[in-house]
Length: 177
Image (cartoon, rainbow, N blue to C red; front, side, top):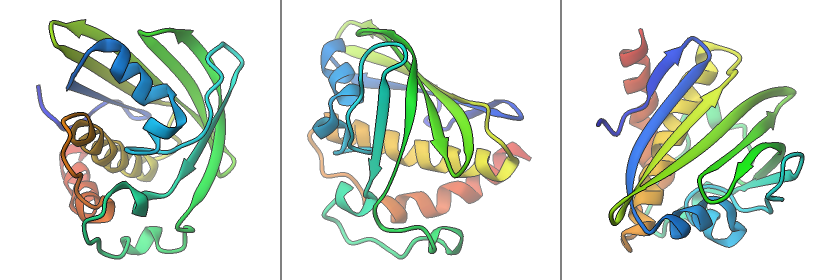
């Protein structure tokens, strides 16, 4: 299994990662605001179909290691930004799916967990992406955030977000073309 995501079709990317368990611990890092804020974005998640999802991003807070400036295409984004979504599927502690309502568009993220011994297989699928540029952005972003999740679960200090992310978008462009 590669740490790289795969482009399933022109509007869908999928990642698989093996993470240190147990299952309930990984579920908590997907659904608990404080724990999710350590690797991705804080914000409450109402664990029911139709429930609200808040995503409060602050990538600079994910590591204490020195970072670089964001790539040019992201420089106009605020350091802290928030948006939401709606839960579309909720089967604790195995499946959570929600919309991703960002800048007038809507895509959908699905997290699926499977326990295997002391490891948990996470399959993350992000569907309904609007453009190739969004596929690249999402691929680099998820790759970086999932690397940080793995480091957090292993008790290690994660790499700084933009320093890790910057080369990934170019790598995904190379892989997807």
